[in-house]
Image 1: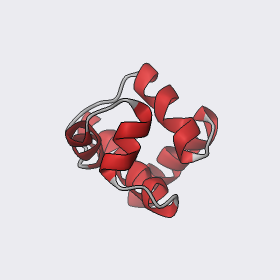
Image 2: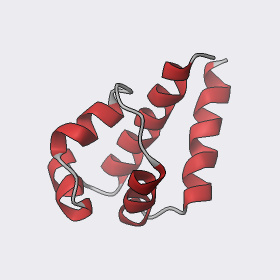
Image 3: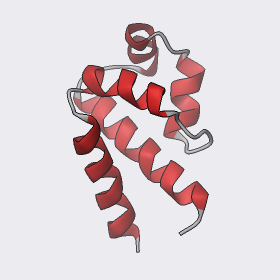
Image 4: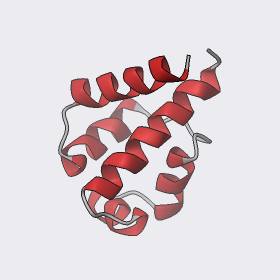
Length: 80
């Protein structure tokens, strides 16, 4: 697995959770104090989030850090 694959898995999980919560990229970005384009780049797997960013996103997505990480790991495992 290359470094970019975990970024793609992160982005897929982020997009899924965002949509399940009824957020647009813009509303999620506004609530988290992040730019919509940054949310888009994360979802596309083109940026690596910092721990600070993940910790900001998780409460707005209704998951803990460990739950988010488990979802990303499961996404990676199903792609193998």
